[in-house]
Image 1 (cartoon, rainbow, N blue to C red):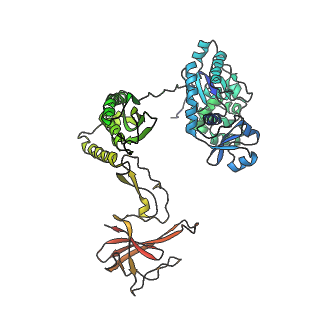
Image 2 (image 1 turned 60 degrees about the vertical axis):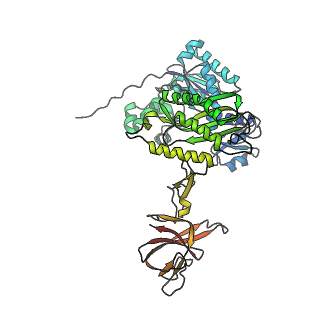
Length: 535
């Protein structure tokens, strides 16, 4: 039997309004500089470039007038424009700065979907009916952005988000570009295939002599599916003006933080924790109603004199209301002291506000207790957190294993409750790293050792890595010589060979004594050390 496939026709595209703010990363950076929080203010027409990984990510119009382009190396961009001001690109800043714009758009026409910072889409049917037409709705949208001081934004209206976005980016520089219903294919026909967003497919199409979306749209859908698969079918529908993707309005996350203010200010810890207890109950109730649990919270404490104390607390499972109150008390008691300070929290005046913010949440079903509960783990966490609150954040430490060449380099001590993150990732290659198995006992400080050959001469290693003699006996305490039953090595470590001041060359050996105990010995600068023991 021959298998046949039938292509289901794509859904009819929806009329879509797309708002585009040109050079949004530059606009966001200028708005930050204008507040004085990102350095000295910059004139709006000054040449500015945002750098990511040593290349220009975005540049202002004045910088483009001097020849600066996206993708240029930093030195080449500065050579073309000596007056160019350079800032690091921060993607979080783009999102943060676009939030007020989204709020203004949603006040004008609800249901906006963020395509990327600086670009969003809205269904056109509702705003067009409310404002009396698609052009009138676009004018209201541009007026809302002009009121925010964001000038030069553009609006495109067409069948589907793909065509509407390219209408907004039209090189004709019209602030409003409306593509008639059913005219998307004709509008897109002269555009290059590179706009489809699939670089590999676009390269292949150009090799086949297909350079525009109109030429690509002329191909039969069945042939495109057989030759290019699902990806080709999807972008072929875009080229034909049949973008059936829906506009999915963003859902603003619910504010789950909880805060309480004190008037008059409170100067006793028990008063503050008692006053915050009801707020802690409300905080946990909101999480439960949202079917969430909190595994990390941030507590902010403000004082009457304008001082503040802020700290993040973690929990091995999830916080209860009592746990939140305990963290507030511990933060007031143990995060630093000032002479004569009744709080012990680094604050020298009365408390006027306490706020708890959930930093990490999880679905409530993922952290259900097992049949026998988890009481022992929670009691351990409670006790260690209490000791930590009294002695300081770094007084209780837990060990983590990271990357490195030596055993001591691989040890990382992390404060209890903090996320275990090592400065040296373990997955990277570390030439000279000791092979498995690793020793069971690593000495806190290497112990002096002696290694001699059968003639009683000290064993040394030349520059070529050749031993002066075969190890016969060794000592790790300076008194008892043990016979060498077996040995392996050397594993040579060359660190910072390019810097004569910090260059280090060491060799490690595994040695087994006559009692069957294995040792890890290190020859560093012609001196032997015992680094660890295999238990």
